[in-house]
Length: 553
Image 1 (cartoon, helix red, strand yellow):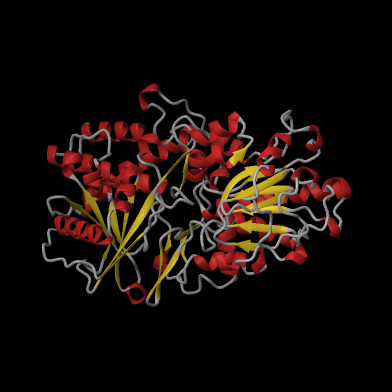
Image 2 (cartoon, rainbow, N blue to C red):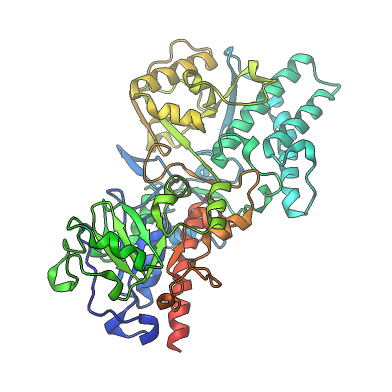
């Protein structure tokens, strides 16, 4: 996947000349995650042959990162297939036998995904006491009732009251607190425990939403995210198998690894003539096979017919008729000003700024022997001193207080004795800056403190993700932040130039769909999911197919 062969045997416009074999449209896909691979797969299967994928990192898969640990596979990124009926990721896995060894326990039907539905979650306080199971169940019922209410604002068009500040966190915290405080059957100590559990549940919810805090998640839009019916499935051999299936029919020379993009020059116009012509440092495809390329170094691109030039970090400029951008929302937030020339339209920039993305990280700890009981499926951290807190944000030296839980990986015959911790938000970034030794020691101390067992040994191995500091990802997945809506997802997905755009130079007014956008953040109903990413890639490939097939007809 290291070579990057791009044919250039003709410079005529593919839309004006028809879909002829000697002038295929040249399509560049930026990013080889699920969206990029899905788009490329659809294009190749439908007769588009001049397709190139540019991937900044040294591997395909994007936010899928499966790591072998002995006989087991640990997922630093995507872990679950969420739902079955109509889920393309599920059907891909099922049809290719990837779920044959998935245990019944790994078919979780709960709203909050655990590694097993079997067993019991142990809610432990920071003074080393376990909260009684019946109290946990009583609180859980209350919380889930209020959670269902958060869905109704979008689904039933209920107006949002001003007191909630249109925030899932504010609404949930206020309503649950009121219900706890008016319960005549609970003692003051029980009420305090329930209030503390509320804070822990909101931390878990933040990890699920990949938001710094549920206070930042929009209440009016929360119910638009759509859950596909069916269980949550773990793929024992690793989610990377889905990536392999998507990539297996893509010729190796189509994908260029270690090829970060600096800028997408779209609606290419005379203002860029000076940029290209100034120096001899710019190379145009001179690292490709000579017999496949006719461009000369510093040859004026304006006469070559493509409306787009993709400028790579290695100084190579690649011409294209269409570019499908699948970079994460986090990268767009940080780089969109430098990444597009001319700049993105103001409404698309506003959508990028309004939508949310944060970091959810995992911390895997492997032990020689289990210190937890056989029925324990997770250890949940409940800080009793946080009962009345309004904001769950911590200074850098207290980052560990954002770790909400450690799940037990099942079955032990596959994973050994392994825990998976969860942390999100700015505190996850603080964790990423620590070394392994510090994180392992900190987590061990937490486990000793909350279980009341001072003899828990340090883990024999630690493995953790670092999605926030990864320069090609910059976060885990998106959420609808307060002030944003599903319309922002659709605005982000809208191709450039807009159909009514007056920015395009006259010579390129017949060049529609120059820059297309895919990725989980562009899917209005399935944002944050692998199936949303895959479907978005298929959507943009289909958009191009329809234009060329309609034109041919």
